[in-house]
Image (cartoon, rainbow, N blue to C red; front, side, top):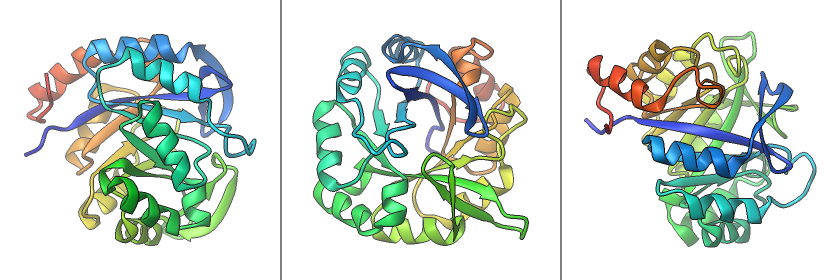
Length: 251
């Protein structure tokens, strides 16, 4: 069995790492370069950087920040926020990213996934999906930082995206985001069983047990932010705990 990955996430707004709850009530946390360097040193498997207001503000991502982080870390680096075309992927890869995450633009223009995959390889294309329960037993896809409900089914969209060339799915649960009551296990189980690419679970981590549960549910990786940012869980201790639970991780 492949080792499961632990991925800290830097949600960045105007050059600062921030954190909110259900994509709202955003508060300042720290400098992204400082946190990125710390997580790389602690043994995180990857680092994710999201410029969370770039799409809504219709502006490009802050490339200088991406470059500064890339220079300080020695782990795989995924960058997302405000991606609109394949040339934006190229710019991020040249700035030091290993993978590029796309969300809203891919929903509006699905062929972007195919074009990016053909130019840079499936392994470089991460589809980030913001999903929320719709009251009918399913989940809807939201765009523009969780501000707009598209009415599109998460299940149908992720299947189509993989067919177009997405090499990985990062599933962000809006319902669970920042609540620290656990990941959406049902959602991650369904996607992990149905899709042929790795699934990263995002939203809801509060305890080490939460990580273990979602990884056992089938997720290939668990992404989290505030529990790491505020020192509630340390990555080395988390990995020791997961190993003790029989979950394969890189120690």
